[in-house]
Amino acid sequence: MTEVQRPGTIGLTLSGRSRVAGVMGWPVAHSRSPRLHGYWLRIYGIDGAYVPLPVQPVHFAAALRALPMLGFAGVNVTVPHKEAALGVVDRSDPTARRIGAVNTVVVAPDGTLDGRNSDGFGFIENLRAGVPNWSAAAGPAVLLGAGGAARASAVALLDAGAPEIRIVNRTIERAERLSKDIGGPLRIHDWADRTGALVDAALLVNTTTLGMSGQPPLVLALDRLPTGAVVNDIVYSPLQTELLAAAKARGNAVVDGLGMLLHQARPGFAAWFGVEPAVTPELRRFVLEAPG
Ligand code: ATR
Image 1 (cartoon, rainbow, N blue to C red):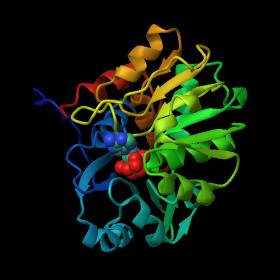
Image 2: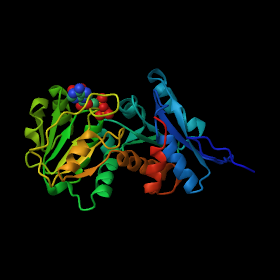
Image 3: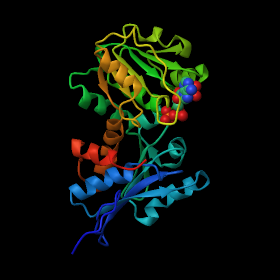
Image 4: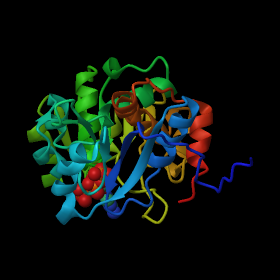
């Protein structure tokens, strides 16, 4: 029998015992998570499914609460529900509470909901995979942006031993709120002074949407950044951003943003399907082939 496969789909045969997980977002059609988890389910031969769950904000709490009743193993939570999820789950781990958001929900055997956040884990694992000798302790880290991605990255960097984190954000109040919520050796820099923040830095991360396809460019002179610093862009569409191209051209080690998406998915997959999945070049290629 010939298996019919269209781009973006993979052949799956489900039984009545399939483990089911998914991603709740609004909209969710652009999410690469179904493709990513679907690849692992197929590679590891798991009787399971990972489905997109388009859930409007007004229905989010009810939809999340319904998961145990529907027999779901859990879900990823994405934009715009990550902060709301923290208030819906029965338990959250300290990392999720510090970040102020949940991206992974696991249905416990007793039907209660565990909220976790693996974005910071994905961020650090991506850096470690991209630059094997990278250490958070090497020196100050500069984070451009103060949104959810910056929060997760800042918490993870502090836990990994970063001696100083410089938050550079256009809206200073948002940087101040982040600093107050997270605590630790955080310093705030004006967006206008973003080049000054680069002096003596060991890591530079763009967590803003600048440089993403369809968004304005990130305008940043790198002259003051040491060439030994690692540069990471959380934007992965395009994969090679102007920031990464400029950093690479002057000799900085660079890490693209796709790996953060791939690595943040590992803990959820392991919890729902019982297998520790690997991030491989084939997986990267498969996820990148996805339209959108
Ligand atoms: P996420 O939760 O994914 O990190 P977000 O909360 O929308 O996304 O945050 C986007 C980040 O990009 C913010 O730091 C935002 O700055 P503000 O806090 O000032 O809004 C930043 N950003 C977006 N557009 C920008 C622009 N044109 N110039 C500078 N920063 C910008």
